[in-house]
Image (cartoon, rainbow, N blue to C red):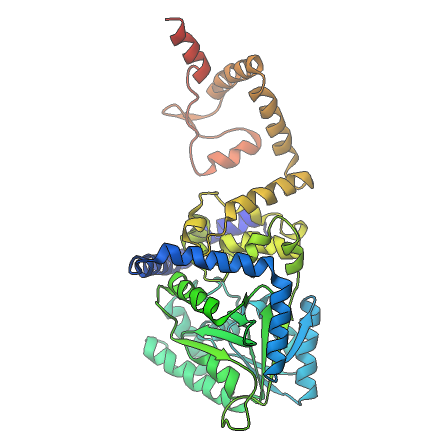
Length: 465
Ligand code: SF4
């Protein structure tokens, strides 16, 4: 398995990916900036959203119990899943008890996180993704590469080729033709499905509702046409009240796609009532922990404020260049490199916190101002403490720390480095290839020449003039 650097190199050389990323990222970034600029109180709204998320996470236990009570009062069945295996088991049990054969799904990163589809398919169930991006991903046996735009790495011509192979549309189909093809393939699936599986953008503790925000309308079909609706909800995705939900929705859509509000906002409060004609007979909410309480208990609890808007991915110089697959985790980009080790443990994900320049663009863009660089530094420190940093780097930093805190030693080392640089291949005074592990730096850029005299030497000289 290639490591993060190797995967990043492959992504950087992929011209199709680069083209797709350049086009889409810029569109998202401009959309968000314009949406907030048009809002006179945009910054205050972000502050308010942060306060709501901070308060919710600080009192998560109370809000979860309130959600359970309200949902049950509406006739919704509430289940608790400690981990991915438990969540998969509950979905499977609901399906078996109700003779479910066909399942339609709306987009849910949580179901990607717990690898739900593979389990359902192994159990002989027919699973159909109905979000257009997820539908493409499923047809192509691919993986999402962005948390709100799963096929950001695909071009229209690639989708046309895929649909031509699987659905018989013309090879040169344009976007309206591709949409019509997908729509007719999916419509049949909705009508035949016994169970709809969705995620949730939020669950409202006050009313026991599940909230879905989409732009395609498939979420409404998934949650109303089949006789059973199962919503998988990460335990952190609580909005205490409908008023709080209103604030969060305002920043979510603007940050995600630059819209004032997404096209469809569905608030699902229990199964169909006797006076209603449409809707499922059963609604289940599965509250999934899967490492979230681990994050809640440590230095990384702030990452649970995340409302999964994707804005931090769009502004991140690393994501912008390597796309989502190079991270090799369900959640890529700035949010992914913190939340993945926070909930899954650092050991299997120790590479991820390195995939950042710590430039802070993510904090600027984040609607709830999550301080991702602060948590990355925590994770990097933990990585060193647990012995994951390469030996040469640890020794190098220790040597540097010693030199930097002993002025005579520092001056001596600086002189030595100034002499040593003349032995490296150079071009116009810049070193083109540094030795040993430092060679990674000069692989794609040159290293500037060291100054003839250090700052303290120059300072000393001036004060004696
Ligand atoms: S960390 Fe902030 S910007 Fe990134 S996805 Fe979460 S809420 Fe959006």
